[in-house]
Each structure stands twice: as C-alpha cells, then as structure tokens.
Length: 183
Image 1 (cartoon, rainbow, N blue to C red):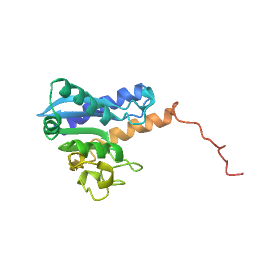
Image 2 (cartoon, rainbow, N blue to C red):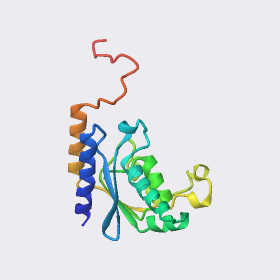
Image 3 (cartoon, one colour):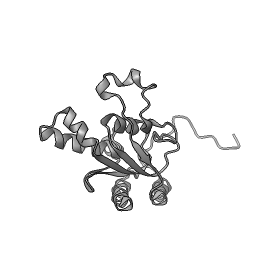
Image 4 (cartoon, one colour):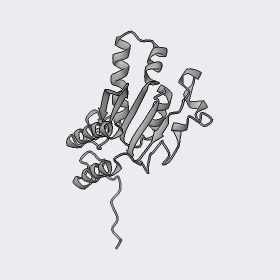
C-alpha cells in the first residue's frame, strides 16, 4: 500500500518538474484514501515556504475550516492522517507536521542539506526542549510523529537528477564571479 501512495506522490513531483519547480510531491492519506496532494510551488508563487507539504496541508485547512471544524477538531483529523512525500521533509516542514500532529510520515530520499526527519535534525521525535521559545502556547508545541524513509528513493532521486541536469532557470545568479581553478 505504501508504494501505491508514494507513486501518487511521485506523480505530484513530476508535475512540479514539468512546471520548473524542484520535484517534490506529496499526498495526505486518511483511512486508506488520498484526501489532499501537493507539489512544490516556490518558483510559481515566489514564496520559499510553498513546499509540497505546506500546499497539501493548506488544502485541508481550508476545507476543514469551511466545514466549521474548530482547532481541536482539525487537530483530531490530522492525528488520523499519514503523509507520503518524495523527499524527507525539510526542517520547516517537519516542524509544521509535528505542530499539526500528523500521525506518520513516509518519505522517499533523504534530504542531506535540510532534512528535519533524521538527516540534519530529528524533529519528528517531538523533542520540544529546543523549540520551547519558538512554539509559543502549549497548543502549538510539537507532538512528534512516526517516520519511515527510503520508500521508492531511487525514483525520487532520479527526478532531482533530471531537474538539476536541465538547470534551474529560477535559481538566483551568483552575487560574485565564479572563480576558475587557475585564478
């Protein structure tokens, strides 16, 4: 079952790639059914926070709030959801997933530069000792979640390879000249 959901996340990542975005995609699953999906939209929105996970979370927040669910009911809904994402959530996304109380995260490849689920930090463990000053009220303190990586990692890495081989037209230009070895 995990591979079927990860295949859907990979489709979202391919959509991102086709739209000149970093190819990360995800789906949120409740009771064995996909209820939300997302892909990176940082370039399209010119907003660095619009990662796939945040896109999928926002879809559910809008839907559940329009249904009249209060904060406690929304938290209960997220506690019954699992996230499948093609790349290990970054520190920002892992913190958000912990705060909303997602039940479990399954990811493809590791995120060696910004990973929040073991590669750089282990925010999925819900350790609040380093985040007390950031999280404010007790209600927004990170809860932690189960985390499993390496699901269809090769497919996720292949999408990244394709993206970086084609070049990122939205990457900022270097502020200083690039030096060659002779200089």
